[in-house]
Length: 485
Image 1: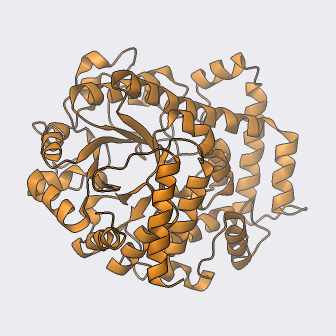
Image 2: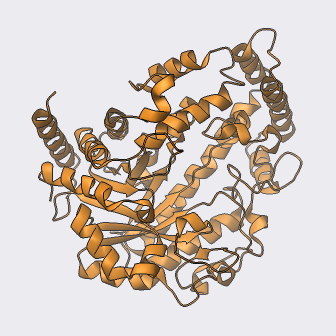
């Protein structure tokens, strides 16, 4: 297909899908979001940042990192000696009920006189731009009093402090804190909604290390086995002791594989033997995922109870582009009743090195019978990709075709629902030296591919502070080419 036909197809597909699902597009004919960290606003001033975003990429929606304990998600020019982070808006304690954590303790101490939402929302509204509170679970346990009591526990009762462990979805103190945070932002500011991101997976994927950088995970720290999980599990008739036994067996399997000890019948057969001996492993995986989904549903209900026209949606971790088990758990049709939009992470440049990292982990356990080239071919066949071979993958990254295929899969997965699909587009997400990097043409092609796949809009990602102006401009050129601005 030549470029003219590509553009024509992208425009007609997006328009047809919007019409079929009864969606009303903004005045600019599409939704153009950007994930905006507070550092550039502090350093450059809100007017300059918003002017540049509109000029370069026609941005009309901001996903503002309002709650993060990770310095790289703030990215100001200077911090106090020890960065902690937290809530970058004013805390209104009356909205937080029945939680151990004192909301005042979560206020980011680095910039005590800076209220990100109070600064950004009025400036955005003057420009006709929407603002969403972007609440993402962080990858480490923050130094906040009481926060450890919200965190997941491993089989020994210890608190793993690093990803993929995190706050427990079955812990009512976490659920109540999260709902209070959403209510605070929705009632205290004229925002247009929230985006919640939980870049975690259940205990099965955690134990296998089935995610990029997963080889670093200790299968003995799989989560969660806290008292709240035990209480809820017993109420559902789940044998908590058998669950632990199953995950001990899985831990033994993973440790042996990483030590190069091939099972007599091979890795894949041995893995299935664990599942057949201990079906509770899958029961517990389902239990964990149900907790995550119930959290989504509760957040959606809370936002809608405050103002019906506000939107609540979910940032979907890129692990669904590598791990077929995790992909199976991200059932968009099941999410649809409590989802106004989804933002699948489709970061194509870093996807190459992330896929290699994923395979380095699972290639030592569940996929240990396969060579790395064979495992990559398996991944491509199962996930429906047509990407570079192993020896070129890191340098090439994934192509715009990956963005098209994943967008289309997501749109098809929620066919008939009112849920909108806003793919996350890679603009200068960091990669290692020598690996695939963004270019203006690459960004342009990724945006074109998203609309060809039926996207209702895009979210330029990962953080504004990482983005080169010329690559942001590539997104703007795609939108102009499509006639959407």
